[in-house]
Length: 168
Image (cartoon, rainbow, N blue to C red):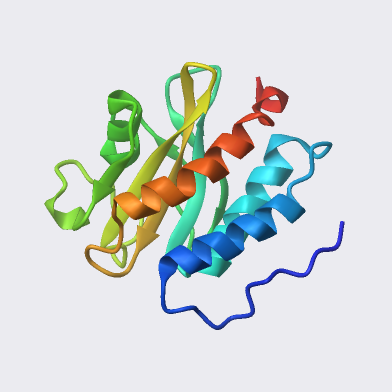
């Protein structure tokens, strides 16, 4: 499926406008027949390109253990496994809610896959009432994430969760 994205490399002044443009692109891009992995990969690429964060990706639970394992991502190489409850991703899973970290150096137990990451947002990926993974966003800027990002990103995750059955 070919699709020309609305994002052309120039950034609107407001991040909220970028989210609106990305949602329009996501609605055209998602493919109900392609499954979770393909759709998650395209969503990560879309968000990474459109928002310009340092790292954008998913960590998902493997059925065989309680570790989060690297899923589709864009950015520099990353940690491949995150032990249960460790780092910001683990905190998100334990809390069952988004975790906004304005300064990763001030977060106890932060896992530094890259020393260039300065702030982070991690959001749970749900399937029914179970957290099956997380969306992890890292920025090179301090204090780069807020509640507006959580509100804008949640519809993307809600839309993606219906494809999860492919990985069960």
